[in-house]
Structure formats: C-alpha cells, structure tokens
Length: 67
Image (cartoon, rainbow, N blue to C red; front, top):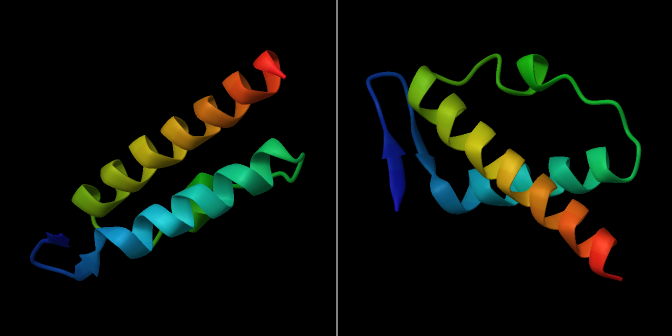
C-alpha cells in the first residue's frame, strides 16, 4: 500500500517501520519531538504516521503492564 498525495508517495510499510522504531525509542525513555519527525510530511502522511506511532506506543505500554 502507498500513501499518495500531491506532495509525496510513501510506502506505508516504510512509515509503519518508522512509527514502530520511534515508538520503541520513546518507550525506552528517549525524548522525541513528533513535530520534528513529521515536519516534512504532508497532512495525510503525518496523520497516518501519528496514528501508527500512538498504536505502537500503546501496545508497548500494555505489554509492559502484563509482564
């Protein structure tokens, strides 16, 4: 699947990998500025990325609580 807009064509697999990677970094205590991470993304890509980022962060937090 690709996210398409007037400004960019990005593989959702690439954005998903980045969202997961940044969520893991945040989970392990690294301060991240999502505005800086998404600064060059168009609105559709930014919204999709942030939803995936929050999804993975929530999953990591839930996993931590169950262990």
